Length: 460
Image (cartoon, rainbow, N blue to C red; front, side, top):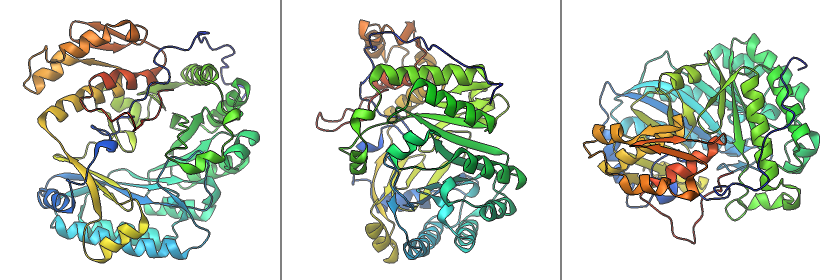
């Protein structure tokens, strides 16, 4: 840890920038999932599955919505259970869903990527994990090599489980750290020591799993510049391949358990900016490159390579190297992405299970993509991935006149965007060290607006 380059005084203006606190989607889809509607239903989902062609490539996302303890900062679709029976029942339904979707797709498509997310997929026992992998390989043509990844909660992961992941050929692991400071951990109900995480990292390398992602969160209660810098030094001593630096979104109106967090202990806007600026400068000074709005990677990591060659994508898993044609989501709340649009499963376990047990797809809503959606999605994805976009070139690829976004380009020249965006001709560039501000710039090109009663998370 002593060899890390320290950042002692992050340069943050006294007055918070005008864009701070604006509400904008995170654009893991376009339009954002808040716009999905019930008009895109199980029938449309079934039609899209039936249209999959034999040589199209597929990525599978498997959602495991259970945790042993509830982290008070969490924004995911998850539920707490101390018993194994709900997990066992859920896996049985999940296996039925995989078989059902495979049948609807007539087992066409080449399955190249599998990602287990949650929740805590590390709660799955060996038999359950094997049965899910076998079901996926049976439902589609299994076409490795591809990435086989799983998200791990250090508190429910053991040396034996890690050895098993290695024996199955898992290639990447994501491990939630968030913050190593005991005071911060207690304030968000996530107690896990540095020594625990460091030990698990050793087990992962021993098992042959060397592609390791870690998650950190800034803006948590009681975080200070000094305490978070220590967390960064400890994280770097573990030498992860990638680091996700997420902004804590305090949305107790959406996630009621966040009311357990003491709001008075949350850092103010300027302190939160200082945490972000310090962390960014620290990671850049210590061998990582910035990826998109909130990721950092070693220069030789596949995500950094994909970003450098403009082959990176953004989807519901964040920034990915996945280049498959179709993303199929399995489990509660899971979202599938087809060339024609999106579908999402019911979030409530009982609703999801009831439909699968009736041999029906568990689709509750979705979105059918128009040609205009595809055009604007490319603009927004490009800005979110690369902090710049040539609107004229994108328009030409979609058969539009280069001036189609003249109104948006003029808006970006307004004083409200002067400190975050630069325009020249049809070219837009994010002009701020606060890369998360690209959400506010991307929102200018968003043709859909939520009613005032609805809210996105704040840009911070």
